Image (cartoon, rainbow, N blue to C red):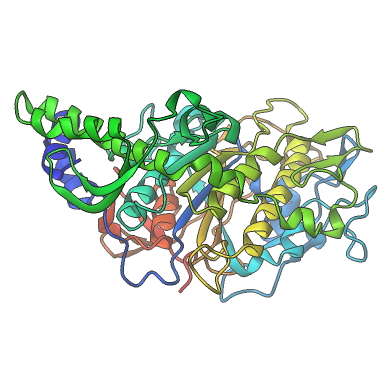
Length: 526
């Protein structure tokens, strides 16, 4: 899609004022990746926890004196130990600079991390895989909403609202890296699963829009080149390589393998351009761009590539000893309560996400982690502590698998080195509070302040940035605003997205988020 017609379309859709801001921000087309990107990741993964979670039960940034005010005394939930005292917290490693190190409740037995009963192996994975080396957590983020849909949009794009006013971070990255990887990554942005919705690439070209890929089996009717999967295409699936042309018949500089039918369809567009209104030309350009993208995907035979790529590999071949008490035939599961609860069904999602990354087919991947934390009952805090730590241990295993895999096309680097992983929810949930009589109030409602985990390439090691008051409110952090000026304020969803984009090598003028935005200092590796 050419820049000129996109300008017209955006003017109609947004009005001249917002259009001017988007133009200044460089959102009118894909941009080339920066030259000095050797240490900048080229992939983004968002692991999404539906329903609103309580991150301070996993990585705790509060001062020791505040913990008894907002963390209930030790108890159990369905047989799983929950809650903790300050003296039970351990640092994953010594502090990195002036920032608080990553610390968590050591619920496991240090002498035997897999032991169950009064101990719990959940969260031990972060220590086992030494994930502090490429991981930081930002706390106390104001999402600007405590409505599920609005806060989901805030998490994805940086701006809360009923509709997207900025594109999702996945789409921004897919668009930013499209020119560099257009011929090698036919699926720029993939949604494996999305319980709270699908992130939208509002205002960006079709190649930055999400493609739902729930399973390899689901792809076979559309994206398999095997005659057994699609016999009706036999005799029509031969492809020839030629120069790729845009909708106006001008070469793009790339090549494209097309069938006779695809070549005929693509060749029709230039003759139809300029014969009607600019709006019709925009539609034709979008149609041409979509067909080009589909042709590139079909030429890759995505199904065959995914089938021959191993997803869950290291966790199966070299199973960590601390997982011995879990279901032996699955890697992304956990049990507690004398085995009366089993989390199952997460393996297929994680396996497909790993295949997509290891095969180098895509730039952005979105995965919902299945378990919903929208509890609204008196057991919500226990549920959040027990299940949240279990789910976060599954996150640790995912990161461990990335850390053990080589990065495609980057000798000496791991897939974790070349990937930015964000772990988030739409918002937090109500905080516990201790009364004057020592008893705890345990409300379980939506709460607009939350945390986001950053892991992978170009992420500072072993830091907790920001914190919470005993009431669960965010505290000011150091921020570099979009104009380059330093400030100190409570971080917002827009700052989370900005920080992620900066880690991915983008400058603040490469994107635009309505309402203002800045990079949180301390998350990106200096």
